[in-house]
Length: 158
Image 1 (tube, rainbow, N blue to C red):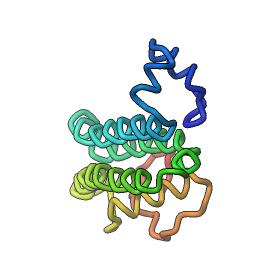
Image 2 (tube, one colour):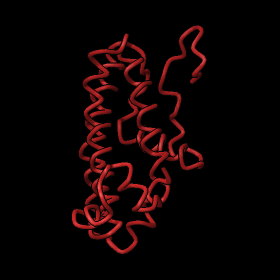
Image 3 (tube, one colour):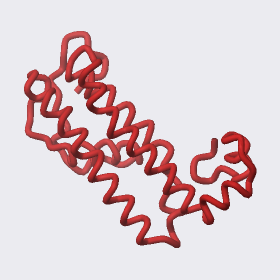
């Protein structure tokens, strides 16, 4: 798809509904984007506990969650433009993002710290910001990105 710029006809076809159905449920593109964004935030947040239960270690859960979060961010490049006419909706999305994703990542970080893999006191919000900065092509705002002890044979690096 084309992210937030995907044509409504293509979205409707992929969903197996008519364009009218899309517009009845989501009168504006911003409404449609908000619904998709909320769904993806919830999925990313809910993945945290599942990864902690199923991954080989808390460190692996952290790496898998970070990969999932980066995939999530990759589809959000046009979000600001789509939300331009709805500042209240954008503010609500930001709050949802922080309310759902920071605690999910905090739990994973705590488990990885308890397992000895996270070696500094980086907090979930800092890590989310650092990943976001990297995905946006900028330099991380926080210089304390050496938060993971390098394991022998780990190609991910520090």
